Length: 570
Ligand SMILES: *[C@@H]1O[C@H](CO)[C@@H](O)[C@H](O)[C@H]1NC(C)=O
Ligand SMILES: *[C@@H]1O[C@H](CO)[C@@H](O)[C@H](O)[C@H]1NC(C)=O
Ligand SMILES: *[C@@H]1O[C@H](CO)[C@@H](O)[C@H](O)[C@H]1NC(C)=O
Ligand SMILES: *[C@@H]1O[C@H](CO)[C@@H](O)[C@H](O)[C@H]1NC(C)=O
Ligand SMILES: *[C@@H]1O[C@H](CO)[C@@H](O)[C@H](O)[C@H]1NC(C)=O
Ligand SMILES: *[C@@H]1O[C@H](CO)[C@@H](O)[C@H](O)[C@H]1NC(C)=O
Ligand SMILES: *[C@@H]1O[C@H](CO)[C@@H](O)[C@H](O)[C@H]1NC(C)=O
Image 1 (tube, helix red, strand yellow):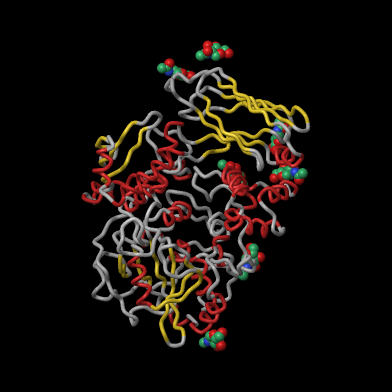
Image 2: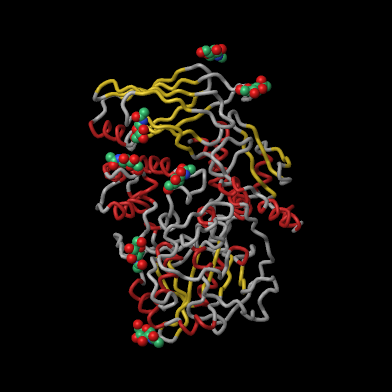
C-alpha cells in the first residue's frame, strides 16, 4: 500500500512538471512497447513500472489502422464475441483492472470438505487444493496446498488469493510448489459462523500475476487521476482531464471493448438558442475513467446525457449531474450559454442530436417541464447507477468483474465506510428483496433464505416507483428518458426509465435522419453537429436512431463487449 501511495505522490507531483524529464531523472528508461508506443520503464524489486508517454499517435497518424482494426473485430468468432477483451487471466504486461479477482471455489456451506482448484492458462501450479475443516462452533481452518509447478511457468511465479465471507477476509500468495499454508479462524462469533455457512468462504484468485498487480492498480488509477477541480486554467487540479487521462482512457477502451476513439481537431461550434430545441439530446463524453467505465459496462459511447426544455419562455438545459468539476449538483437547469462554457471547462466532447420533426411536434414541453420541476434539486441517482446496466444474471458485466467478488469486497468496505455501499447498492438491494435498511451482511442472509444468488438479485429490473432516501433515483440517461416519457415520446407504453443507459437513449428512434447541419458545423460525416472536443462523438456506428420504443424496453438486455448485442425484445 505504501508503494501505491508513493507512486501516486510521484504521479501527482510530476503532472505539474514535465513527466518525462522527471521520470528520466528517477532512472526510468525510454522504450517502445508492443503497440509501437513510447513508454518509460523502471524495474523495481518486485515489479516493473511502465508509464506510457506517447499514446495513440501512430494510430491517429495513420487512419487506415482504423479500417484494419474494424476488420479485425468483425472477424471475431462467435466465441470471441461472447467473451470480453479484458479477461480475468494472467498477462505478460500489466493491464487495466487486472488486479480484480474471480471466484474459483467456495467452501463452508457444506461442512468440512476439500476442493481442488483447477488451473487456468498461465497459472503457476497444476492444482491447488483447499481443505476446509470446521473444528468446532468457534473455529474453522483452511489449508491451501500448492501442487507441482506447471512446466511452462517461471520459477518465481506466484498465485495470489483473496478469501472472503461477508465477515472475515484473508489474502495469501502461494509461491512454492508442494507447500501448505494454513489459515485458522478462532473465537468466531455465531454470526461469523453463520456467514461462513451461508455465504461460504469464497476463494477468489487475482486475475493477473502477482508481480503485475501493483502496476495494474497504478494503470487503472491513471484513468481518473486529475481533472477533479473546478478551475479550467490550472493543470491537473483544475477541471480539464489531464493529458495522460486522454491517452490512457482511449487505450483502455480499445483493450476493453475494441472501440477506437478517433481524434479530431478541437474546434468549437457555437450553436445558438435557435439551433437547439426542447427534447433534443446532448451527448457528452469526458476522458475521465468514469465515462469509460460506463462505456465498458454498457457499450455507450456517450458518458453523459442532457436534454433541453423551454421553461417560462426561456431555453434551458436540464440534466442529472454530480461531478466535482461541474459547478452545480443534482437534477438541475442551466442556460444554454452557461452549459456550453462549463462543458468546455470540463473538457467534454459534445454532440447535439436533434429530435425528428414529428417528435418535436409530439413533444409536450409543458408536461415535460412539470416532470422536471417535481424533480429539480434531487441528488444524482448513484443508488441506481449499477442496476440500469446490470439486467441479466451473467451477461451484463465485463468478464473480469465477478459480482460475487464485488459483493464480498463491498462487505469489507462496509465495515469501515458503510456510507459507500449504502449509497451505491444497499438501497437498491433492499427494494429488490422487499426489505428495509439492511446492510450487505443482512441482505445476503435474506438472499440465502430466499434461495437467490447475488447475480439473480442484481438482475431484477429497477422500478420507477421505488423511492430512495433522497427521493427518485435517476442517473443522467434515466432522467432524459423520464423527460421524454413525460413529454409523450413513448406514447402510452409502459416504460421504466431507470433501465435506460446513455446508449439506450441515443439508440431510440426519435431523431432526425434528414437533419440539415448548420453550415458552421464540421463536415465530418456525422449526421448531427459535434460542437466541441478532441475526440469524435460517433454514435452512428452504434445503432444511433434505430430502436422503436416497445413495452418494458431495456429491462433484460445483455451488455457485453465487443458488440454489446441486444437480444430481441430485451
Ligand atoms: C455445496 O453447497 C452448494 C450450495 O451452497 C451446492 O450447490 C453444492 O451442490 C454442495 N456440494 C456438495 C458436494 O454438497
Ligand atoms: C508441459 O506439460 C504438458 C502437459 O502437461 C506437455 O504437453 C508439454 O509438452 C510440456 N512441456 C514441456 C516443455 O515439457
Ligand atoms: C511435489 O510432490 C509430488 C508428489 O506429491 C512429487 O512428485 C514432486 O516431485 C514434488 N515436487 C517438488 C518440486 O518437490
Ligand atoms: C400537454 O401537457 C399539459 C400538462 O400535462 C396538458 O395540460 C396539455 O393538454 C398537453 N398538451 C397536449 C397538446 O397534449
Ligand atoms: C448464465 O445464466 C443462464 C440462466 O440465466 C444459464 O443458463 C447459463 O448457463 C449461465 N451461463 C454461465 C456461463 O454461467
Ligand atoms: C434453490 O434453487 C435451486 C435452483 O435455482 C433449486 O434447484 C433448489 O431446489 C432450490 N432450493 C430450495 C430449498 O428451494
Ligand atoms: C416497471 O417494471 C415492472 C417489472 O417489469 C413492471 O411491473 C412495472 O409496471 C414497470 N413500470 C412501468 C411504469 O412500466
